[in-house]
Every structure is written in structure tokens, then in C-alpha cells.
Image 1: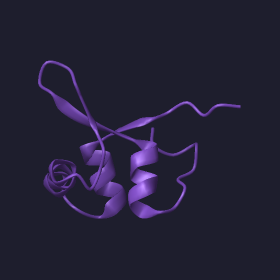
Image 2: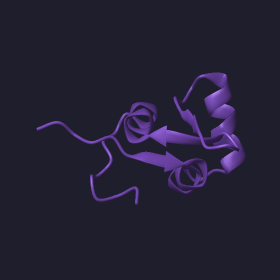
Image 3: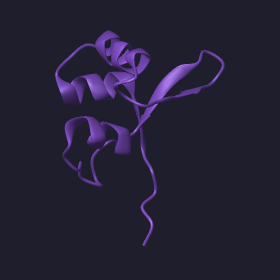
Amino acid sequence: MERIEQYLSTAYVATMMLCSPTTVVRWIKAGKLKAVRVGKRGRYRIPMSALEALTMQPIGAGEGR
């Protein structure tokens, strides 16, 4: 069964990684973390798979909401 990709906000990722949202944006701009831009304001959303790749650990399916 194919897994549906979940997308996380920079604030949520920052909370999980114990850093600031600004640091998450820096990781995105440096190419360390993949993300997509959404909406008129161009806010970033990070795929759960990109966060797992950064941490090298799977994140539970029930988390990230």
C-alpha cells in the first residue's frame, strides 16, 4: 500500500527538531532539507519523507498533524 505524503510547516518541524523556524528555512535554502512553496505568500511545507531523510529515522504515521 502506498503511503500518502504528509507536509509539515516550518514551525512544526522546528518544534520537532528543537530549533527555530528561521533555522528550518536556512536548512531549506542551503539545500539540507527539501521543501515546496505554497500559497500566495510562498510559505514552505516540508514533506515528512524529507524530514525523515534529514534525521535518518522514520517518523510515526500518526504524528505530524
